[in-house]
Amino acid sequence: MVAIDEHARIKGTRITVYDVLTYAEAGWQPSSIAAALGLSVEQVQAALDYFSENREEVLQNYGAILARIKRGNSPEIEAKRRQSHDRLMARLKEFERRRKRP
Image 1 (tube, rainbow, N blue to C red):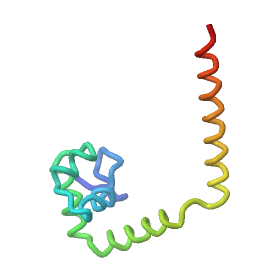
Image 2 (image 1 turned 120 degrees about the vertical axis):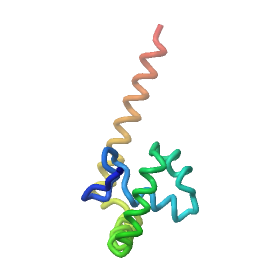
Image 3 (image 1 turned 135 degrees about the vertical axis):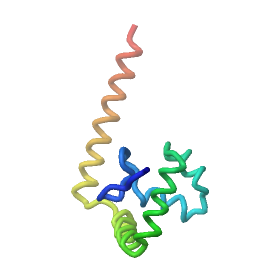
Image 4 (image 1 turned 180 degrees about the horizontal axis):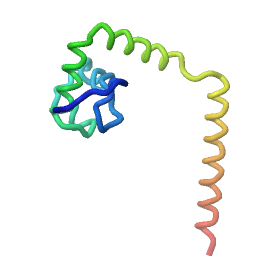
């Protein structure tokens, strides 16, 4: 039996009911969702069953998640993200430079 944990994750994975719900709302079939997320059809069905049994709570949390995504990162986090990206690009450039040396 597939279980859903207290964080609405499919036990043994980091995939949530909300992840499955995103695909289901787009009209995907359980077998296609399973293939896309690397799950079994039983795991997808367990997430869909959990949603059916806890519809109000899941929709409330899902709405909060979507609102958070829509807001984006705070200016502080966005600045750190840009700095991290800049460091990564500098490292990649250095790696390429060293690789091209004879």
